[in-house]
Length: 409
Image 1: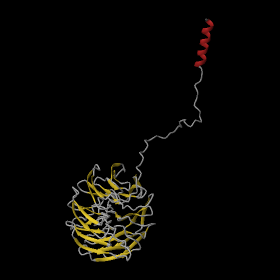
Image 2 (image 1 turned 120 degrees about the vertical axis):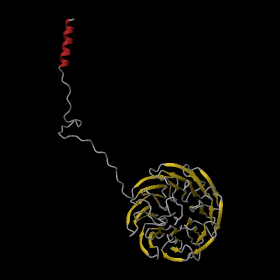
Image 3 (image 1 turned 60 degrees about the vertical axis):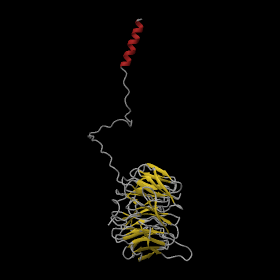
Image 4 (image 1 turned 120 degrees about the horizontal axis):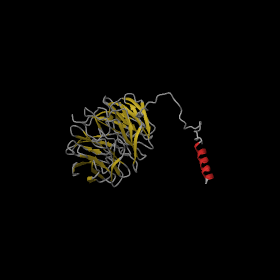
């Protein structure tokens, strides 16, 4: 017993005298002594994105040739060849809703002040949708598919062309037909309405028509150069100047300016390719339009004289948008979106998508540029502009809502 007690005491004595393990002086975790006073770390700075930087992208299920339209709250509305119309959050690109039509959607949406969206489809119909929910309000069927984009009259009338050779005027609330006007060929051009109630539209019969927006009665027609073998047609949608002049491109490789009242030709400018692009007007009267000769031209609005030209890497069917800072934005078949100096044509920046850019860009009041591509995507791109230029017709459709209506005088 005594021996056991002695053994326990000896064990405790040795344990108490054992040294604690010391940290490895070479350990990377050893704290280094310092005489510096530590200060709270600064918050990371918000990254400033350069113009031409993508803010977001949204992928649809098909090619996007439809040109985006914007709601008053910044929502982006666009069609796709996956048969659908999409509503996207303008800040994030998140999908708000989608609506499926019966076929591809080439037509660009138009947004009314009373929260109705209008858009055509290859299924031969034009649809009126609730802007907030995408719910169908009405549909109207035509005799052929609808490539044309709707225009909206001040009284809510919806004007649209069809490949059944006709232009239609529909009641915006009900879809009831008010009148129709038959041209000599398909109507792929999108109608526009002047402040004095004249509707202008092109046709594949080589003509541009001026119609009474109330009745559909023809006021005048203007015939472009006719090919001896085939009708070339007018796919370009007109732009209306502050003096009532009408500007458009034609498959006869020319850009025209006409007197809006009489249809008399003011001037013509010859390019080296078809002109599908719809002209845009700068605040100083410069006319901008792209062509199949790979170029965008800047022309004097009074004389048609060339001010500058800029050559891209492929055909240009996209229509320009002119920013408040004078920059001109458009897409090209070379997969790129360009920003050009409106005065000189110098390139400010370019952004490359994954495929052709035949969609026409729309510029929001916050300077974000929205455009579609054949790579099935819709892009939001930062610019230096603070919205559109203050001009009579700064973009295709006149405004981000694509009403296709000239401002009231």
